[in-house]
Image (cartoon, rainbow, N blue to C red; front, side, top):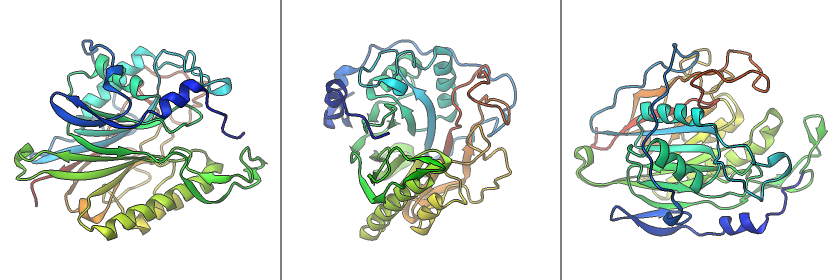
Length: 366
């Protein structure tokens, strides 16, 4: 089914441009205006994890002195309780608000990871993210927030929470890719047949600068994140492979132009390390922060299905500073192996069907 027309409400939100605002006396690039933030509230009590996790590690890695921590987390439909009139039919978000108990569990996972910069996927909007921050993790120091509407049919976007200044943020809406959609999607007619292929959810680029003096750093430390949420679905492989090809080439060109530019591609790849989507990135010189991935190791799985689909990939300039032994996947409560998510209730303490992935990066030289 072709992408539906946008209503005036969503168009207005989408066309708000990123701009500089002031927060705690520092410049911050965000969108939309900080005036849209809700009033702070006391953080909620943490959710208890009753038993050892089925996947991921039971405990986060200890923080490394002289380093910052970067993480990625698909937070599974972080919607607020306000109806977006532009989302109708099967994408209607009325009643789709993430339940309070899931937000409590989500906040607990984010607290345990304790990342300085965390990329998020499946966030409804900047407003929804600010509301979550103020009500559940207000004391974590995430003074810098970016979440930009990409006009996704489901109404979700990529976001970043950071303790350090964000100096630049952008997306390129419906970025064109090569080719057209095939006639079939699996063995069914393709809703987009014959249409030019564009990004399903254009990556969010965010430049972060760690100030001089933090953790003893003699000078500022800058890095660029591309936050991805590639097209999902087995039959969507052709689509996400084109997305990955474009971004991998873009990162390659940036690296050639400035070999010292530290770049990471992070997020939900909806593909495993042995598949072509990820190969596109490795062929462009990007590497996983885990030195080795054993597909049978439950501690490294990132999705309820047991797959590794959430990753942090880095170029050579950033890899020189990555502390590979610090990389971890944090386990949280999930449905049992093989359970049908459509019919199986979520267990107590459930935050998402994905697990957060994190790694420490030294900023004081090695």
